[in-house]
Image: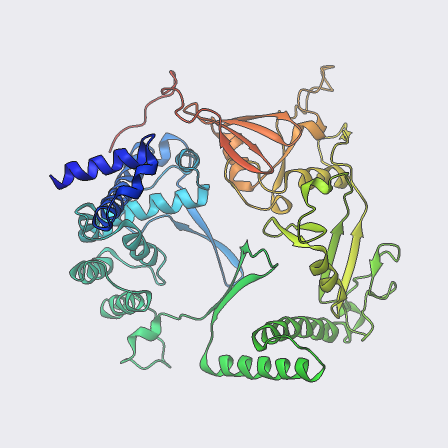
Length: 503
């Protein structure tokens, strides 16, 4: 009876008479909310199963090398598998297609597959609880993320201990408790390299929580980014005292801003001052240690044209590079807040007043780049892309142009959409892949390799507008505003593609 009533409520909400929702009682709305949440949880659990089965269909030998995460540690890049010891490997180039149909990035799809494999193969108790509806998928994925990237790596026995403990409380552990569980597993199985200075009773100290992270992809409309850090006690107290002193100094100089704002500004001043002092110390040693950051006097403001130093004699600690573009409607960037620009880092809008304030800060070097017409057709007979053409493509595309990829174009490769033929000129043929504006696109290294070595194909249908086709025939349109599906359902599996073996 209750299920029938819920079905009726769903029909009311989804049907043409949606206004009838006002007739539902509070009890009916709560029942409907509970049903929708249960449906959402079941769908998330099903998606984990789909991701694991997708991995089963694509072992590395079916397409390409095994997928890994590129991680930075100690200033060096290294590779980590997408799931822990004992999980099957997954072909690198299968990940992007699953991500594209889900409307997420390749990195997010890689995490989804890795979490699914970690849960199915190394956290089986938690996996069973997810599919029984006792633990939501998002909570189980947090556990999987921790066990995959633990340092040192967890053996199957160690992760089995974590699985048993987490499953015993139906996955209801917070990040701190989870870190303690992992540390206990490391200590019990003696996985860590012994630290002669550590207290053997404090096994949890094997997990070092210190970090300083800035989310450069999430830019607030006010022109701010979120920073999070966990420091040693002494370091944290030193930073707190420095911020308190900086905030008090700003107030004494006449600032009427709030304490939180003054502390935030003091942190920025601290960073710029420290950078400048470091550079200055290097430059005051021998001639071989000097740092040359001279600028063109016609394009630089706020620094000495000969030395690149700001008025206090120290080298610039911040560089603001301005690309000036002029159009009748300012590219749609004239907002109710006033004249607006675009921040390349994070691809967000910033107000002209914010840019002015950045340029006015001490130890700042301002560079105004020559105007590049994004609609001009530039070309060169060579394969190598000249700087001006490269800059034009970067400013036009803004990010990697693969569906749903957001990696900045400035750190991407410049790809010839139609491949360049190095033998064309010698054989008297027209170059099929010329180095020119309408045949160049920005692709991050991952998706550049994907386009080169897999069945993914794309074409530029208009300046800065691309249409991609996946190996299974799904099509996407990508431009500087984002990605949209051309055919949401996609055709059936194309003939001629060998079926990978099942596990």
